[in-house]
Image 1 (tube, rainbow, N blue to C red):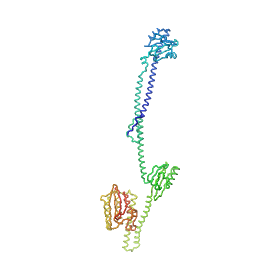
Image 2 (spheres, rainbow, N blue to C red; image 1 turned 120 degrees about the vertical axis):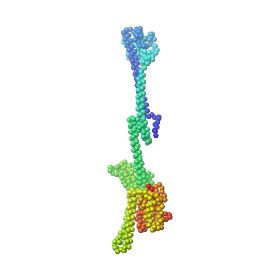
Image 3 (cartoon, rainbow, N blue to C red; image 1 turned 90 degrees about the vertical axis):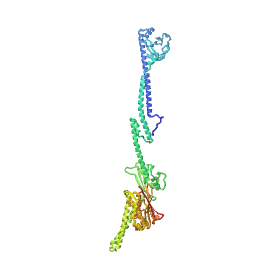
Amino acid sequence: MTIQLSNHVLSFSRKLFLSVVTLFLVFSACFMAFQYHREKEYKIEVLNTQLQDYNDRLHEFLFVTNVPDSGLLSKYVKEHAIPDLRVTLIRDDGTVVFDNLQQDLNHFENHRNRSEIKEAMTRGSGYSINRASESLGGEFFYSAKFYPEAGYIIRSALPYNVSLISHLKADSHYVWFTLLVSLVLMFIFYRFTHKLGMSITRLQQFALKADRNEPIDTDMQGAFPKNELGEISQHIIQIYKRLHKTKEDLYIEREKLITHLRISHEGLGVFTHRKKEILVNNLFTQYVNFISDKNLASTEEVFSVPELKPVANFINRSLQSGPTDGEERRMSLDIDKNGRIFAIECIIFQDDSFEISINDVTQEEEQARLKKQLTQNIAHELKTPVSSIQGYLETIINNPNLPRERMMSFLERSYAQSNRLTHLLRDISVLTRMEEAPEMMETETVNLCTIMQNILNEVNMELEEKQIEAHNLLPKELTVQGNASLLYSVFRNLTDNAIAYAGTGITITVRCFREDHRFYYFSFSDTGTGVAPEHLSRLFERFYRVDKGRSRKLGGTGLGLAIVKNAIILHGGNIFAKNNPRGGLEFIFTLSKV
C-alpha cells in the first residue's frame, strides 16, 4: 500500500527551501540595492569632487588676477572647461555676475535660494542632481563652492543628459555576478533540501504505516539517502521491526496463555488490586455459580458469595497490610457443596493483583475412596482363596490317615483356588499397569479377526460343554494400532463372561457393524439370560458381582469387565452394556483407528 500525502500541503523540505531562499533573495536584493546606491553615491561624489576641483582652480585664477572680468572668465572657461560645462559666478547676496552660457545676466533671478547655493553657504560646498535650470531650461548637475574671503560662490554644472546619466549609473556587473552566485547557491541548497526531504518523507511514510499497523516494505531501508538522517531513519526502522517482532511474539505467547487458561481443567480468575476482572475462564464462572447456588450477573460478585467469604477477607487483609519481604501471600480453602468438593487457592502478586483458582476435586476424592475400597476388596478377594487353600492343607496335614480319594479331592480344590488366586493377581497387575503406566504399553498393528478366532479355538472345549455356538463376523483384514495383549484381554474377558454367566445352548456373536474416519464400532452379544437393568451401569466396577455366591463358585475374579473397560479407554474408545430386546446381553464398544 502506497501512502498518498496531500498535494495541498507543502512538505517540510519545500517549506525549508522556500523559507531559506526567500530570506536569501531578500538579503541579496537588499545587498544589491545598498551596493547600487552606494556605488551611485560614490560616482556622484567623484563627479562632485572633479567639479569642486575645477571650482578651486577657477578661484585660484581669479585670486591671481584679482579682477573677476567676464572676458577673462570666459577665456579661462573655454581653455580649461570640461565639455558642455556651465560655470556661474554668484555673489554671496545671490546675484549672478557671470555665466558662460548666458550673456544677458538680467534674466537671472537671485540664486540665494538655490539648493546647492544654500548648502554651499552653510557647509562651504554643495551639489544638486537633476535640477531644472530656470534660465536655460533643461536639467543640470550643479556643484557649488563658497569662498568667504572673496565673497562669491563658484558653481559649475554639467547637463543631466544621457551621457551623464550613464556615467552616474551604478555598474550592473556585480548585480549579474550576485544573481549567478545566488542561483548556484539555490541549486546546491535545493539538492541538499531535496535529499533531506526524501529522508523526511520516507520517515513520514514509515511513521504513518507504523501508526496504522501496516506491514513495512522490505525495501524501505534502502530508499533512504546516504546521509546522517538516512542512517538514523534506517536504525529507527530496524528498531521498530525488532520491537514489532517482539510484540508479535508476545502476542502469540499471550494468545497461547489465554487459550490455555480458557480451556484449562481448573477454574481461573485473575483480578486487579481493585477487584476488577482481567481474565476469567468459563469454568471459573460455572464453579462460582454452582457454589453460590445462583447465577452471578458479574464476575466481581464472587467476593460477596458467603462460601467464599474467607477468601475475600484474606484478600482485604493482604491488600491493606501490603507485601512483606519473604512472605508468600497465599491461602487455600476446601468447600463441600451439593455433593461436590472444590479446592480453592488464592495467590496475591507483587503488584497487588491476585489470582483465584477453583478445582473440582470430587473425582480425586472419589478415586481416593475407590482406591481404599479397592484395597479392601482385594484383601477380601485374596483372603477367600488363601483361606480355602490353608483349610484344605491343614485338614490333610492334621489327618495323616485321610482316605486317598478325600485327600485328592482336597488337593484338587486347593489347586483350583490357587489358579483363582493366580488369575486374580494377574488381573490386578494388568489393571495397575494400565492405570499407572499406560505410556509404557507397546503398540503394534493387531488383526482383531485373528485374535477372536484364536480365542474361540482356545475355549472350544468349554463351548462344546455348554452347547454354545459362536460366530466371528469380524472382517478378516480388520486391524488397529494398539497393544496386542490388552486387545486380547478385551475379547477374551467378554468371551469368558458369556461362557460363565449367559447359560447353555446360547449363541455368541461378535461383529463390526460400523466405521467412520476415527472409529470402528463393535457389538459382542449373546442370547443368554441377560442382566437385571439395575445392574447394567455397574457391570464395569471392580469386584462388582451380580450374584456374588454364583460368581465365586464359577471362579471369576470380579475384574474381567473392569479390565475390558480400561483397555478400551486406553485404545481411544468407550463401552456400555445393554439387554438385547431379543434376549441376552450385548456390549457395544468402539476402538480408535489411530
